[in-house]
Image 1 (cartoon, rainbow, N blue to C red):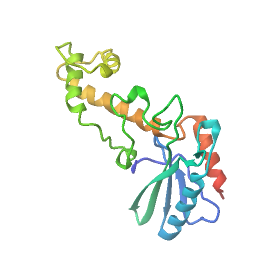
Image 2: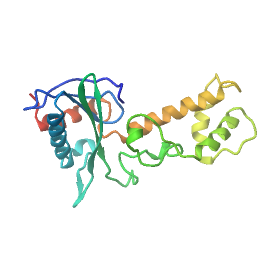
Image 3: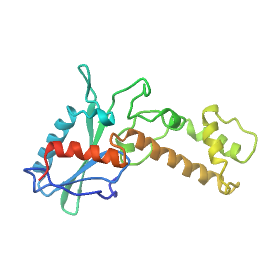
Length: 215
């Protein structure tokens, strides 16, 4: 995420000394930059408090169920080129009947790879995958090569999709499986993204931003 660029840049009212923007990333991230650390932190807290109470039912963003709050942020701070930089990742943990594990949690079709919560390191783009996959993916490789295997049932549909590839050989199968796991992890991050990367999602993201107040 650190090397991801911005979709746009803007300034919040009263914070002309802090540059802000939406990060090109599967999750929903606001990036703040400033030479003044105190001002950056002040604005970040304003954004956090705004998000804590913000709902937009048109895109299934829900701050509360009854008295139970659902919103927080994951902050990632760094210093780059003489400026303080803070990425603020918007999080929402509410559930529905369709998504009992969480609307913004890895959905059922990717849980064969990752069903645990998405933590700080994963938010930034490094997959922390369960140890079970070390052996399980070897069985997937055998399955793809039509060798005797003990592939887990929950990997079967995914493996069948991979099997449609025409470049699978004994020399390439390991890298292919690793590549396909990477694609699944991108989907995991997309599932965890509150505002989707389509037009509807990004318009909704900007509604939240505009609600805080732009110059």
